Amino acid sequence: METTENKMTISDEGKKIALISYITFIGLIIAFIMNNDKKDAFASYHIRQSLGLAVTGLALLFIGMIPILGWIINILGMFVLLYMWVIGLMNAINGKEKEVPFLGEKFKIWFKNI
Image (cartoon, rainbow, N blue to C red):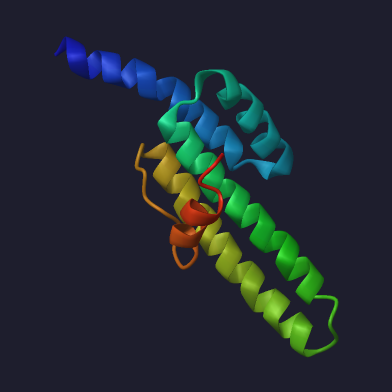
């Protein structure tokens, strides 16, 4: 029973940092700074996923500058990005290290040094 409680307290800090990472780009920066000292594995995992979502969002903004086809890709991509964000946030809330759909596995590889 005591080991379970210890796991909960350790993951509580990581869980807080993971949740902060999904709240805007500023939250991502704050979570990165908060995790820099402790290097909680759970928080690092979700920071990588959230960073991947932020980079994908920026890429979609640039694609959206292309007339007509870019606009269509941007609109559809934003809905998919919102879906991936909700899944990532729900995983962080539930304490799961599960990647976001579609690109989560790539985010793990691309940002493995974070």
